[in-house]
Length: 418
Ligand code: RNT
Ligand code: ZN
Image (cartoon, rainbow, N blue to C red):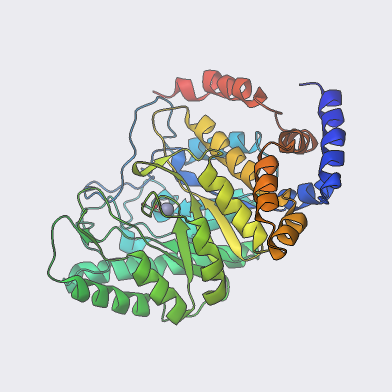
């Protein structure tokens, strides 16, 4: 696209927004400062780089077999570096414990340590990225149906040790990067069929968490992520939303809202204001559930826009951490990253461009026709001209130009991975 037309379109859009009391320059400034936490696991279908032989145990699964997935750390880093060339702003990278730099050694989950992430910290520093972290209790021979909620002390202690070590790693990352590393704790624990021990498993999980969180750290922040159900664990999830909401409020922990972890008709956007009242911060996993927690690539759909708008309406951009969480193995994986990241940014831009003062004035006066009318008009205001200008300013592809750029990387790099 021509630079000149992007600039012209922006000037016209700016005027249009100004007429509604919205400052487009300010919106762009805010967007520039929104740092997304990019999930590392879209690049390799959540496999990680462990050298463990006895991996089994489910908990998570990517579907599809599009060629070119990252097979090692170097490839994953190169993919992320490529992704960054297609998106504006400064972003974070969210690592899972299974992505350590294990140097060919067998390092079990209860042995992971900061040293296994030293090269990541160094690389992130060079790329001007901050790191976030996750414990990984899925895809391991000890994963089974129950990890931290397992009545078997041996298995439970194994996962407690793993999670404690992950907090230590997060602390080291936070210290190194001089910015808190956010560590997410998600476990798949549940039951395929009716259980008569709902209380017991939740009681065990609470105890395990108390143990895990008994050490206070300064450079990391914990967040806990619920789920509705997992494949083959349909009847019961130990770490349900109620469980973690209660635990988080009681113990001052951030709750992670994954947009795929609720009934599809439930509004995640509606949860933001309540959480903001009772917990200090929120972690998000922006995803796109199709019929279930399918982790499709995030798009600019109503759910994503509602969520972003709600956060802006609550004036809570500084209290909400925005992570992405999807893994589609059926399409070009770099493309998947870029589509989801850009969609999330667009959603926030729409939120930032909302004529909120006017809308609230209408609402205060009981002018509900006017409120609805403006909400409708807002959808087709020239936000896209502002978006194009954001891309131009950031020297990243404008509009659909990133398609070609990604095709090039595929031709030159990912298609050669066999
Ligand atoms: C799974 C959770 C969890 C994972 C990642 C890999 O349902 O959403 O966040 O997707 O940690
Ligand atoms: Zn998630």
